[in-house]
Amino acid sequence: MNVAENIDLVRNRIAAACRKTNHSPDDIKLVAVTKTVGVEAIEEVLAGGVTMVGENRIQEAWQKFQLVESYAEWHMIGHLQRNKVKQCLRFAQTIQSVDSVRLAREIHVQAEKLARSIEVLIQVNTSGEASKFGFTPDEVGDALAEIAQLSRLKVKGLMTIGAFSPDEKVVRASFVRLRALRDSLQENLLPAVELKELSMGMTNDFEIAVEEGSTMIRIGRSIFGERT
Ligand SMILES: *Cc1c(COP(=O)(O)O)cnc(C)c1O
Image (cartoon, rainbow, N blue to C red; front, side, top):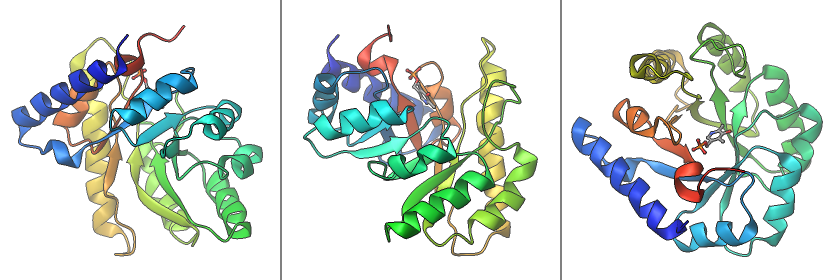
């Protein structure tokens, strides 16, 4: 495994998907998903020019955050329990996995105590798979109306995990759904909230996501190899 080479390969694949659909690679942020990955490999990915890392477990993330010396933006990308929010705010600059209004309220309360703000994405279950967290597309409008009132939360956009399916059409449909949802919400939202980011696309499906307007892809295995 060569992290630097793998980053180049991913960047080339992003560029190719962009060429196909007239997007600009400059508009696509790469979040290296470092769950289960050791500190040394995280340092390598940061040395390779990636600035964002994503973790899904609070305890693991906090331990590594304390050991990694290079600058990084730490993103929480996994389901977050309300009793872990306080600890999450010790390292996260963005929480991508806001999947309930109660969670959003707790993030606000804890951020208020720290007199800080926190960037968040609203997670949407676009595939309808029962195993996945996130608001249903129907719920997002009402939830956002409430979450937008929480002054310590800076809502930056939406996040989804693509359908788990061998059928490309099914996968693509989940990304199209997120983009369409963003577009319709944006029309009805206060100007204060700009849903700029669409965090969608992982190792198995990021090219499809880029073709459908992703602004942020979350990549683990294509950079670090299979997780053991
Ligand atoms: C693990 C994970 C990823 C990265 O998945 P890969 O298949 O390793 O690229 C992206 N997003 C979330 C929410 C994850 O849990």
